[in-house]
Image (cartoon, rainbow, N blue to C red):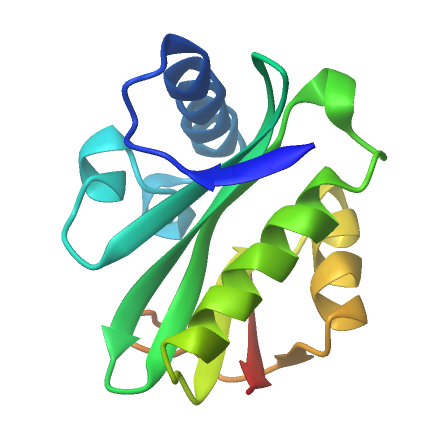
Length: 151
C-alpha cells in the first residue's frame, strides 16, 4: 500500500469521495451531515491523502487546519472491498504524522454517533482520540460524536 497526497483529479478517487458524501447524506438530515464535497476538499488549507495498491484506490483521508495549532480529520473513507485491511489505520497514521510535522497541538474530528460509525469511533479511540465538546463551527448534535487528540 502506498499513501500519497492527492490532487483530486483521478476519477477513481472522485468516485470514492462522491460515494462517501452520497452515503452519508442518505443517512442523516442536512444539518447533521458534515462531509465535504469535492469543492470543499479542494479548499486552501486542506490536504487529502489517498491509499492505493497499484492503480486501485483503497481509501482516503484529509487534514484541514481549523484554527491556530488545531487540525481536523475529514473525509476518512475506505473502499468497500478494502475494508478490514488496515487502510484507515494507515491513512490516519499519515494524517497524524503530518499534523505533528506541521506543529499542530491538537487534531479533532466529527463522526456519526449511530452504530454504523462504531468502527470509525473505535479506530479513533485506538489512536488516542477522546470524546470532546463540539469545536470550530460545529454545534451540539445527537447524531454527531466529536473527538480530539492532543499531540
